[in-house]
Length: 315
Image (cartoon, rainbow, N blue to C red; front, side, top):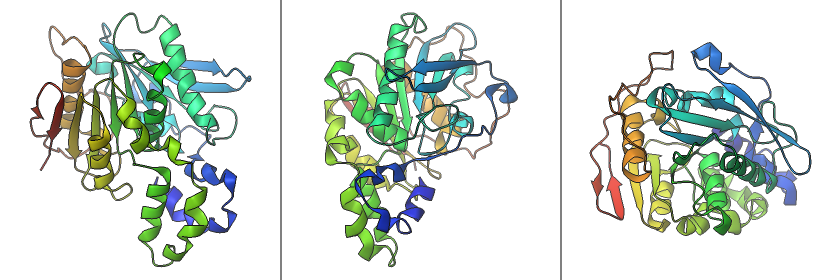
């Protein structure tokens, strides 16, 4: 997300109705494929009703699947870089479906609103209609822009009940909110806010306006050290969410915490407690033996929880 907001000031004079595309910075070439990091995978091509081809990767669980995670990445690059946030999940017993929005990786078209929301819906519908879930829970996991967009999609009445729970990491409260916030940080960009902010996506798509309609259990995660999307926006989203819900404060830079084993365990604990995921009969380590980018250990405090609402803080 940082690349996007550094460019907002330079592109301010292009502020027209179509400038919502400033939220998307796709890359076409892959940095790697799952085989390179020791993961089995399958290419999945979904055909949009208008003929557009949208690409994703299916990562099968190691051993008997416990559930499936539908992963929605942030605004830059493509699934070949964001895979490092979920490469541990197959070893933990979860299938993973990673979707590249239109214009990213092998997906055709150009990323823009509201069409990208339709891509997320396309992936959700495919998962529901396929036999791949095999009666096991479906978990929606979005990061950054992916979390923010998935909140709008999952709030639709027609999508209630299509997933058992959701994890939203580093989401923002609104498109105009985050644009204004970033521009306020620079004395150069501050006076240009009226030229840019009004042309950002409308309030009806804002996460803060929609998260209250999501009835399934949800885990809101946000790093106190996030220098892209302020921590207070994660707290505001949690406050606006309907129960059952949990909040997990993190440490580390923007969307880096999920690479840490203690945060991975926190996510799996949520899956088992809130998402109807059965615990393994013999639990194997959550952290895979395969190559992954190392991260410092970030202690996660035990959750303070009741039947409807919980907050957890990491210090």
